[in-house]
Length: 427
Image 1 (cartoon, rainbow, N blue to C red):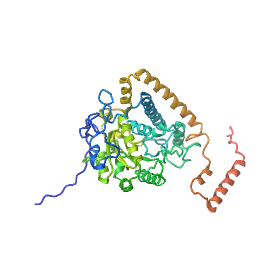
Image 2 (cartoon, rainbow, N blue to C red):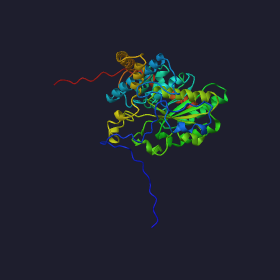
Image 3 (cartoon, rainbow, N blue to C red):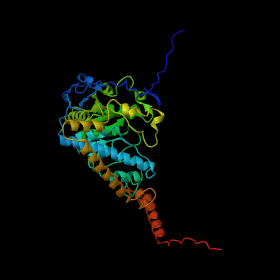
Image 4 (spheres, rainbow, N blue to C red):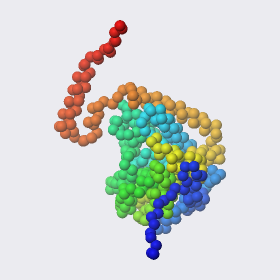
C-alpha cells in the first residue's frame, strides 16, 4: 500500500501544568552578529534574518558592532519611558478589573520594542502601531490623561466614544489610528511611505504587527508593494510567541524565522532580541538610515515574550504554563537596561525605587484628572451632536436636518422642569 500523506499540526512546546520549554529558540551570543553597511544587497545579508542581533551580554555589558553607544542620559530616559509604560499598564489593568473601564491590553515584557524604536526614529516619522505599542505615545510626550480619557470614552476621548478602549490616535504626534482589524496598518504604512517618497520628503513610516497577524493577506500585500517600490518603511513583526491563545508555530514560525520572509521578497530581514533595548535601538537606527538613503524597506522580527494575558478578556493559564514568563531566556527588558546602567555606574537600586515611586504618583494623578472629564457611570458626558462630526468633509442636507432635529430635542428637554420624586404616604 502506498504511504498516505499526513497533515502536520503545530504543537506548542509546553501546555498548562508542564515545565516551560524554550529549547526551540535560536539565540546568538551577544555581539556575534555582523553589522553591514546600510546599502548592502539583500542577498549578502541574509544571515541577519536567521541569527539574532544582541548587544547586552550576560554581565549586562554592551558589546559588538551593533552597540549604538548611547549616552547614559539617553539610556536613563529610555528606562524611565519603559517603566512609565509598565506602571501605566498595571494601573489600567487594575482599573479594568474594578469595572471602571471595559477593556484593556497590556504590553508587559515588550516595552523595549516601542520605546527603543520610538527613540531611534524622528518625531516627524509616521507611526502605524498595533495595540501593544503605547510606549510610542510615552516617548513622544503624550499626556497619559489623553490615553485614559479614551479608555473612559468621556468628554476628552480623542475618538469621541466611537472606538473601543486602547484604539488611540494622535495626529499632531504623527501616530496613526490603531485598528482592531489586524495587519491593516502594514499596507497603510507602505502607502504613506510611498506618498512621502513621491513628495520628496525626508520622512519614513514604521508599523507594527504581531507574528500571528503575519498570516493575514495584508502582510503579504504590504511586503510586495514595499519591495517593488522600495518604500521608505520599517515593517516590525513583534514575535511575542502567542497570537491570543495560539502558539507562534501556527503562523509559520516553526520551520523558519519570521525575519526570513523578508529576503523572499527582496527585503532585508533582521532578527533582533526584542528585550534588549540597545539592540532594538541599533537595528531601528540602521533600518531608518537605509530608508532615508533610498535603499528601501526593512523587515524586523522582534523576538520577545508576552508576559501577560492577550487582553483583559483572556486567561493565558488555559493554554500555557503559568511560570513561562519567569523562564523566558531573554529576560525582562526593564531589568536588563537597569542592570546595564548599574554596571556603567550611572544607576542604582535606590534611584530606581525613587523613580518608580515618582512615576506611580504621576499615574495616580493622571487618573484622577481623567475621571474629572467623565466616567462610565457619571460625570460629564459626550454631547450626542458630536456623532455628526468627522464623518464627511461636507455634510449632506439629510444629516444637517437630522442634526438640527436633535439639537431642537436637546433644547426642548433642557426647558422641561424636572419632576419631583414621589413621596409615599404613611398609613
